[in-house]
Image (cartoon, rainbow, N blue to C red; front, side, top):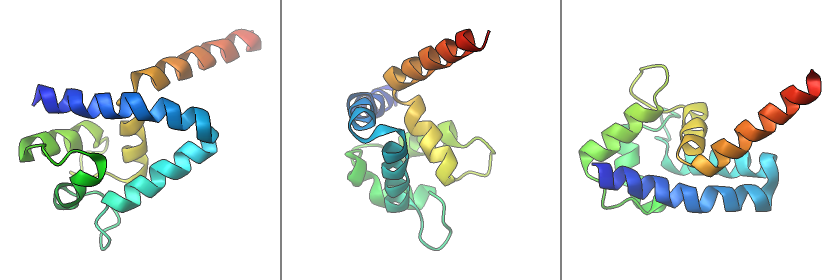
Length: 116
């Protein structure tokens, strides 16, 4: 499971900062929302285990085991309902990209410094 999680992190660690730089904040969020729609269950409007398993290849994660997919859902599931909402998915994608998180933290600190 650790290797699949590392695989997930590597994919987003490599791609998300590049996307953010090219698209800007609003563009990146728009692309993440499109990604969410590709993975979601069309009837339920959320990403379920079944919809994630069915569409994992879109993210290059076709080799992930069922346990890996469930772990990914649990990691992103903030409200404990067993599925990922659009917001939970976007937050998870940012969390899987440490470079973006570090940049966001740096910008937050800069902004707080300028306020005081």
